[in-house]
Image 1 (cartoon, helix red, strand yellow):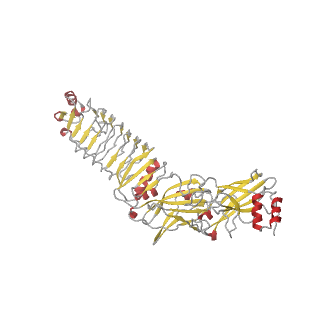
Image 2 (cartoon, helix red, strand yellow):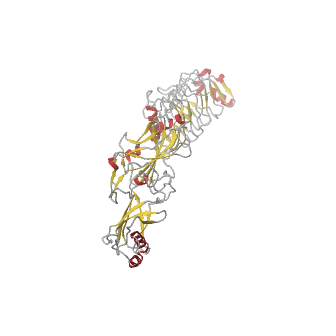
Image 3 (spheres, helix red, strand yellow):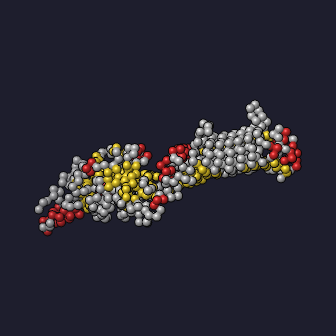
Length: 587
């Protein structure tokens, strides 16, 4: 009979009296030894394991951890042991167990313990097959979840319990399908285990040596099928921390009887990379021949995660390829990749709806996409927030187009200013919806938007700067009666050759030079809401009259009463602009 170096008297008496087997002796010894180390272990927070279908307990029944007492006073032969989780408590695995040193103890522990592997508190070899969710299986994904714990410089507590809190050292990645292209409207593809790529440049983890089995560059991950039937499957793996290089494959989504879909590394993985102890959810949209990342959620592995392997709440941008919508959660998130995913290959009169916080960088992203792609786009920004100024351009010219292919646009509430030259030369633009908060339309904002036939100006509008609608040859009617604009600046509607009707309100006091230059189709000007006849500027230097090159004698002018009709007869309109008093009519 082999007798351990450390045997309490009570246990020894039992051995001598009962001639028990060695296993019985050790079991009794552990249970009755007042110096035995009893393990209590947690993992940063509950429900943080890499498993995706279990009940969410921090540990699985049968899990093994290796614990060692590295202090100088550790009892030889009782200074390390493997402990097994039985569903509620930890018990020694086999015949060995640990005891407390008399004075100060320092403990180190690691998980997982796998027979035949040489992992330790300082080193770990990442398995490349992680495609099983069955504890005990050789390819069980839990065996990739390398964790360690330490308890330095502690004395034995009264209950003999050692509390260990394990820390994750690798990165958990979950790729979740959040949407499909129209190609899969009737039938979704059948997926199988994914292939994840190890980061190109590995990030060192302090005090740990991390390697990959067989120097592998890929990992076969876990495929978790969506039970709802929506095809929102998830793919999970544990990877070493690190960064990817441009054009690196992040994951290959393998399908039955079909070509795999390759997901390239995105900005998150190229810059921030995968960090030790972090858990990532990458939401992807699946198209016919592609799958691209549209949002990323990053959490501490021990916080904010459920047993199903997804974050409690997604905070990144969301894309729906079926409805062509993008929901942003912060300014500056929009990029060509997201826009392309939302449009899902459609290029003709497609409506793109974008909501959430936006700034000038997000607007620039849309413009850049339009310049790089041949498309006719209806853009709805009605749900955008934080956008108070729509940026413009500092260069004027017929060759400059910031929104090529833009057919219509809905601008959001809260917008107060449209900057200069913002929509110049947008010849395909046929519809503009302005918000009730808009106060200023800057100079040449809609210059040469030849497709516009009408535009409703909101009552909040105070400033309409010069040449705002210069050369809008399709515009047929303009109503300023509900606005707060007091001065029509020079060339505001110059060159609007299809303009037939103009309605002015009581706020208008002055009409600038060339405001209606060459508006040759003009037949009606309605001043019926005006308490006074607005002043029409006369020529100054090289400026023309307000209605230069217009057959003003044929235009009907409506006023509110006889008094204003008489005022009109003696005004600059009749004496210099050439309007006929006979065509001035009380409305």
